[in-house]
Image (cartoon, rainbow, N blue to C red; front, top):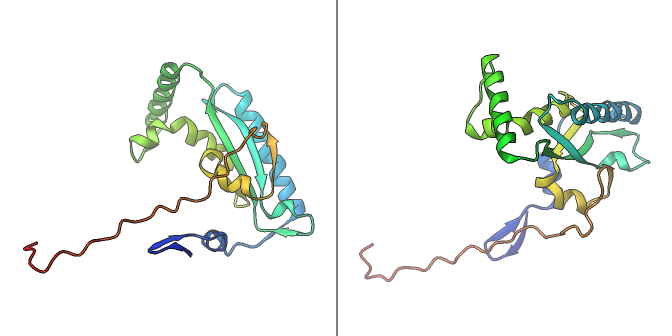
Length: 185
C-alpha cells in the first residue's frame, strides 16, 4: 500500500501481484500455448452453440506470457467480456429463469438471488475457465482499467476507440470532529 494523502491509501501493483500470487508450479510456454488454444475452442463453442445464453465479445490476453523471454509462465492471464445473446431483455431474463429452474431440478443449489440472476453469465464464465489451473480468467468489464494499463493484446473483439484510463479511486475520508468537553454524547 502507498499513502495518497492523510488517512487514505491505495494498493500498489506490487501489492496486487502479491495478493494474487500462488505456490503453483510454473508451466512451460508450450503448455501455456496449448491451454490458450483449448480456451479459444471453448470461446468458439460458446458463441456457436445455442445452449449458452451468453456470448463472448472480447478476449484480452495480458501478463507474463506476452514477454517472449519468459520460458516458464505462472498462468495464462485472460480477460473476457460476456454479453447476453438475446437482445430482448425480457426474453433473456425468461430464458435465464428457465435455465435456473432446469439446473435446480438437476440438483444445483444457488447461494442467492444474485447468483440466480447472473446464472447465464456464470455458466459461460465457468465453462470458459474449464477448471484449468493454468488459466487466470478475469471479467473485462470489472478489470478493464487494469488490463488496458499493462501490455496486452486483443484476441477477439476490437480495442475501444478511447479507453478510459481512470486512476484508482482515492476517496478522501472525512475528518472526525472532536466533541466539546461539555457534550453529553
